[in-house]
Image 1 (cartoon, chains in turn yellow, brown):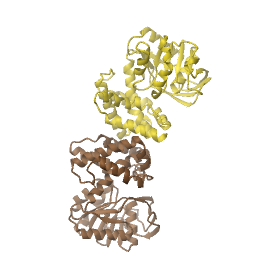
Image 2: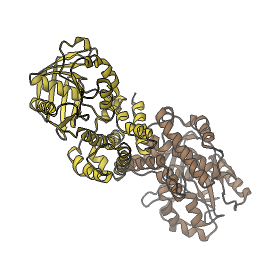
Image 3: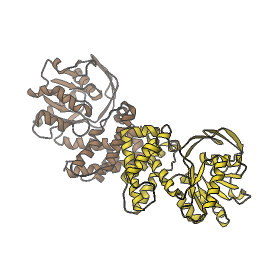
Image 4: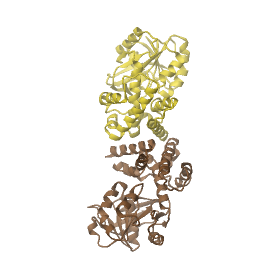
Length: 306
Length: 306
């Protein structure tokens, strides 16, 4: 198959390296001056070095990709969609493999329903240096699907096989949008507090004060979920909290949020996480004081780092 | 005059050293094993080393103090009042030279109105080591007074002269309670954010995000002020904010809050500041989300430091 990977950070490097190694035609779209000819992978999925191809402008693309994998940080989504918008004239499908709320929605606005696949990525990858990525943890398979139900299930199942065989465990689910919100909740609860205090997920969860704040963040998130009738796996915030503390958290307890590294560089995905909850709530006339203050604190820390 | 200084931390060391140097009979009440025979002072009010007397139990007191100066941290107020309660049988006046809300109120409960002087202390002192204190900044005179108006003005004026002549600039004001709230507002806005981000007052005020949070903290504080009809120098939060940013902040912009050192030791006065606002509001059925979350974040950071 033919792939274009947009953004070659941690997640993009993984896709580019694994798909190239599996013999697919894959090229990475990078920023000017950031071309790469090899990527070294280390961590829980083994170590290897792979020759890769990159282009630093969409004009350099000399084939029509079957799948365009969008992996940029949420704050670069608008720019990335602008860069690749010419592809919507062809048949490429866009796969959104990003964090937070708003990326999938923006992609659908540009490419239209039936052209966008949503991927919930929950392995942890860290870009140690440009061209060197470490896979640190894997919470679950990548889950892919089409929330709009326009893309054939058979095709999505086949595509998940392609990724799995390439070495990135992936499965299809018609409920991918629920998986996305599962992760949004997880990230909204843990990432900003981990980034603020520079602590692991486990430390954040075992401190009774941060735990109390996380409970409040989740509580407020469910106000948004109810106001928009967003489909989730849980019927209440209590049910989610149980799942969160008992299932999701323990396997990742020793990890720091990537938002910690991001905040030290002065830019995070807070506007696609707690900031997005606040904005969604506001449209319905609801105020989320906890998430609003948490988002402001992260923006403050970003500002201090600049 | 005869003084007992309860607590020989930063502020207590200043009182004990300056009053002893001026020839007054002064003794410091310290915790067991923390006896001192000299205090070294440095900083903006000059450098000197002074012989001092301390006792580690109230039983060691061999005179009746005219004034008992309470300087312990707010979280030790209950214990300190318990230690000195035998003095209420005599004629000593208690002078509360502490930060935050609740200390004066507790002191009046134990000693009764007419026996308690309130002091608004706004010089900055830092205990570099046990027996070594540096005076770093002086925002204004210490202001003393009796909110209950039972103590003679002439006596309070005379007492402020005694302090001033000893080297601690002090004046009497019938409006001392307004001065206390002035400082409570200042501390609630700046201290927790400075302690959380480990930044100076100036850095906190010039970051637009922390400034926005401070505006919100002040806004909520005025809800308490209105609910209780607390007398202040300002008719609105806007008026206070102007005073705060234009007058109070600039001379102290390079300073870190003492709460930063406190939070690193695992214990702060947050319950007498933002936590006290939240508790006062709650009694009137008002919820202060910003101050509540700020207080929780400080308690979280205290916990991480233990």
